[in-house]
Amino acid sequence: MVVDARLLLALFRALYGNVDRLDVPTLNQAACLVGSLFTGAAATAHTRCTRPRVRRGTRGGESARWGTVATAVAIAAPLAYAGIRLAWAAGIHVGASADFIAPYTAVGARVTEAVIGAACAVGALLTLGLVRPWGEVFPRWLPILARRRVPPLVAVLPAGAAALTLASAGLALTRGLLGMALGLVPATPSAAPENWGAWIAAPLWAVWGVSLAAATLAYRRRRVGTSERSRT
Image (cartoon, rainbow, N blue to C red; front, side, top):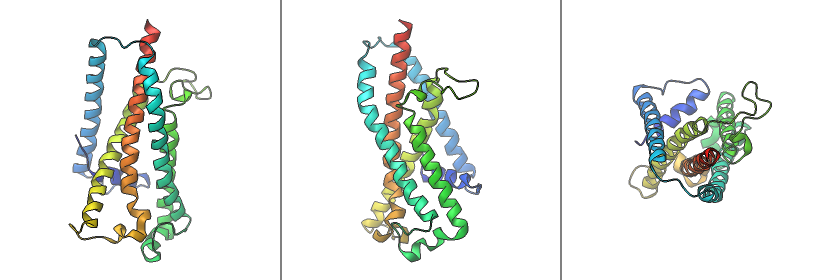
């Protein structure tokens, strides 16, 4: 199941209270996305129960190596995007012409840019949990859940949903940018070279989504391997 850019754009709008894009087709995409995640989780659990056990240490060691790289990329991509949005929120013309950026630096629009930038920065911070101890054990300062183990699905399901949404939107928009660059479709002002701060979002979302998917897979493999070793 592949979603397009509508779901991600609707979610960004919902961050600042605008839900006009959450129409039936978009909500249907969200429902299909959630359903596909649960189906994948069920299939993975079945496979884990029926296949031979992996030799101790093999899975965790391999996942740690490439998972760390994927997590680093999944943190860098949203921080780069957040930096542009927060700069626009501060009225700084980064990667855009004066005419293009004017609507984005108006008083009301600056709040929107700040919210989007902050949300991306929070996403980068949460991604760090895929390789840090607090992603496996709840911090001691957290009420009720302090020092309890984090169920893998608590991290895997939302991270997987975010990865699929970001990758699908990023790849769809990147395809549109390539079409404009090749003259296959009319170009918009947001695709102009001087407005790279706007169109860079498409490849950044694609990279963010793919790397987050890889980081989430590595996290799951490491956690499942740890659980299997603890039972033996």
